[in-house]
Image (tube, rainbow, N blue to C red):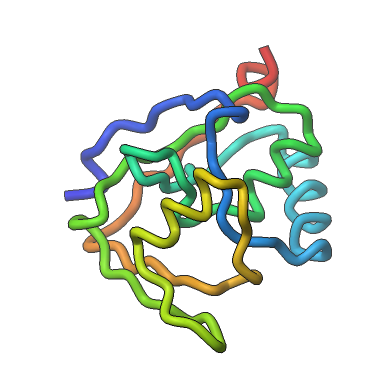
Length: 131
């Protein structure tokens, strides 16, 4: 059950993106998170590579908010369904890991991860994540 998995604070520099983001979505998230002063939704990461499964926009918002750590849920690819939505190539979990380790980025929303059950939420103060 995913909601029983622990949320881990991960150093933002260790998290490996693999997709570009939409700037307007990041702007909206930065304003929302800054207004609330609370981080509510953890990123989901591949536990082996720390590549992002879900949360590229939230990671970019965290960078803009100068957070040092981000709440994350560490998962294995056998715990999710993976869907490639890239318009011209078949993306696989292995390719996602390779891109993230090489610092290469797919276009926004090139992949989709479907989780088996509810993901946990959190209410963590931004001041804790900055320190």
